[in-house]
Length: 230
Image (cartoon, rainbow, N blue to C red; front, side, top):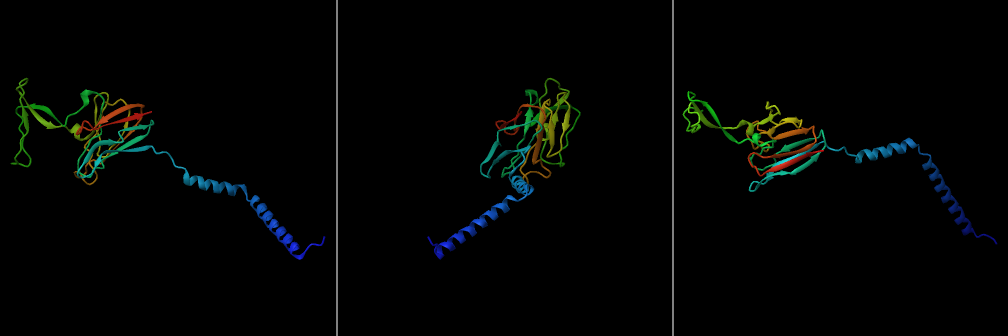
């Protein structure tokens, strides 16, 4: 049988395309292995993320008409050596505290009675202002005057260790919790730009010991949170 001209051209075209495909395949197979490895490594590095060792917890929230008295999230689970940072996102200047009181004796009040000698005198500042201290009856010891004063351990950052030693912390403190403390307090935690000058806006704790750590807000005792360290 004699092959027609069109059939011959079709065979030549098919053979040419097949040869091109073979050449491309061979060329791809000759790509060095280290080039492919570099490409794969580049892709992997853009998608891999490192686990965070810092957890942020909101103390308060809401808006200007309805501020929230709640920790969010209320419970946090972390590992040994990890940290939690509390901040106040409220839209109004309402403070909160992050307070760990590990027994009833260390739960502080915002104000507390103190006694001084009867010979002590109190001078209002500024002089002549319309103010005076709250003086309480003291029948048990008439030689001492009992006054009601603001409790700095409720409003300032402070730590009370297992031996009863007091450590005063700086504003926006960071502290490593050993797990033997009796009391840890953030002080009054204000939203940024809505508190007093140099007011506290953050409180960061790193936990060294596994366990369950309950805390609350002194100003709003129903406002409670929990840290679980594994």
